[in-house]
Length: 261
Image (cartoon, rainbow, N blue to C red; front, side, top):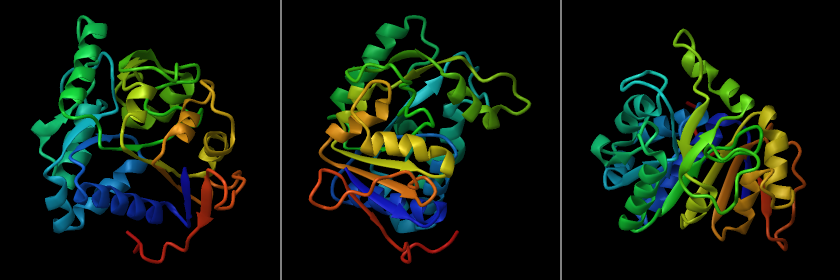
């Protein structure tokens, strides 16, 4: 795992957008993308460049997760997030974006079809993922099997609290979702992990420096051959920076090539 420590959230967004476009330019066509607050800035970076949008238009996308029990068009759904933040900004066609089947009558069977669709697309070339304060990736909460595939899950209280900002005046945050599994995410050829803010520091340290354990699902990223973790100084404050002779390469950069938003 390569860890890049940047000065602030704007630098993180710039670098993540740069890496994502570079992977697509090299031939990646199938992406897994995340929702949440941090990726919004990344998608805005893509929107700033017509050439980047043109590159991204060739991609098909499988979203990492979707909340259960929300009506079509609900502003808090990740389908609405795609319509608001991803499709307009990135240039990816809306019809090329698939979300996990959160409202299917037979969730297990629909989740299996979702996995099959990923396989038919040739697998995931690159995944852009975030990190929960409890160490989750996608909605694989602590205790999730590191061999898990797409499935219905219960959401941790901390996860629901983190999503509350998207539900102000819209009712309670759903208690369940359908998410890509840990193994599904690890099947991607390239993974870009983004984390910002001091509240993410314990999770970042556990993922990068801690043991690989289902208690911290994100720690499974240590087993992947091509992961770049991009974090700001606040999120990196508990890291033990390992030199280049180790399996984890961590270093600070100035972020000077990333103009402020």
